[in-house]
Image (cartoon, rainbow, N blue to C red; front, side, top):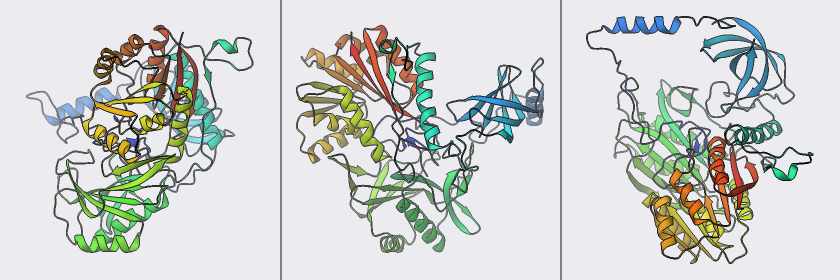
Amino acid sequence: MSNTNRSGRGKNRRNSAASQGQGNASASRQPSQSSRPSPRQQGKEVRPQGASLSAVRSKGRARESAPIEGLPVSKNEETVIDIIGMNHDGEGVGRANGYTLFVQGALPSETVRVRVMKTKKQYGYAKLLEIVKASPDRVSAPCPIYDQCGGCQIQHMSYAGQLAWKRQLVVDNLQRIGKLNVTVENTEDAEQGIRVLPTMGMDEPWRYRNKAQVPIGVTEGGLVGGFYAKGSHRIIDMDTCLIQHEHNDEVVAKVKEIGSHFGISAYNEETGRGLLRHVVVKKAFRTGEMMLVLVTNGRDIPYKDEWIGSIREAIPHVASICQNVNKKQTNVIFGDETRVLWGRDVIYDYIGDVQFAISARSFYQVNPVQTEVLYGKTVEYAGLTGKETVIDAYCGIGTISLFLAQHADQVYGVEIVPEAIEDARSNALLNEMRNVKFEVGASEDVIPRWKEQGIEADVIVVDPPRKGCDPRLLETILEMKPERVVYVSCNPSTLARDLRVLEDGGYRTVEVTPVDMFPHTVHVESVAMLVRE
């Protein structure tokens, strides 16, 4: 019921202040905290001074309806096309007489009948009407509301097909954007290109998410909560989500049931009224502990003690019940104030042998099983023997840093968000790791200062947000000249762009491994290993 970060709308900087996590596949597809709604988004129509609203709307409709001359298809026309690929949004890509059409729900190698819905000069969008010839990778999506929900995009594709497509997505970006030479298997020049390994998938690609962020609404029958419908803020009520841990579903259902019983109001985005905005649930897979966060539009909660008592009775795994107060008229989930209603302010979980304290607003990877796979590959590519000095740029709460510290002589982590560094230091103390140090600041400012202090990195690890590395950080890496660079990416396009810069600066990309952190969504993580020539 929630996106991560890393999924979906873009991974936010790893920080304890970020409300989105990775990822993700979710009900919380929302702009970042820095985004500002336009007057139109706020429900106001922008029009030239002196013009009537009806005139502006009529002019806009005329402009939208004006056909583009010379296209091989027209709006509302039906046609049969072959699907030759799939774009990064999971839409099938086909061509009608050379004109590109994007078709939601169509898979590569299929022949489909479609209706053209929208046309632009270079491409258009079409609605899938009939599958004339189905792909061997087509399956029936098991989720009953898959067609309505915006959380998953490719449940209708076999899992093996998903893994193959995600690898190809990485390859295509490396070649097209990075202009990089990727090894073609079984060719004589196989040693000359970048090896892109098969996507590392899950044995059980369901029920993998440890965090739910569920927007709450209201109907005549009581409170509803679930995903937003595709492209809207209309809530699709649900009782179960097949990519969420079952206990998360249980807690959300219990909160809705109790809230409806006591007549709790749901927040209304348009009016700014109503109490309950979101229900956030976190599940520690290893320890079994759970945290519930009620995000409210005000501090006072009616029947608070009854809520807490009923939740504790129904869900004994809950170790922490918190309230976050967000009075701002915004679609950002969390506000600035968080308080504990019952239990601890943190729950504990492990990734590998490293323990982490997870607070209401701290960032923590939403797929702990694949996180261990991802970090294991990062350590492997770092090639550590126990003697190296490692710098972890974009270190967040220290998850990768602490993994690396188990195999290195010294690790330095840097992150621009102060709250994240506080969490990182606490987690280092929790694990009694004294060979790791954290500092607040921008990597491109802090790392050169470390170099002036005599700190020379053998390995630099970067794990940036979706926008990729800051250009100044790439320049810093080239000036610092570590023997190895390990790039952990959640966006194949910015990965390709940044690898091109590093290659032009004297590094060679040896190998890239895609890792499927978010099955049934279009998102793919990658780990790349670079060595200095």
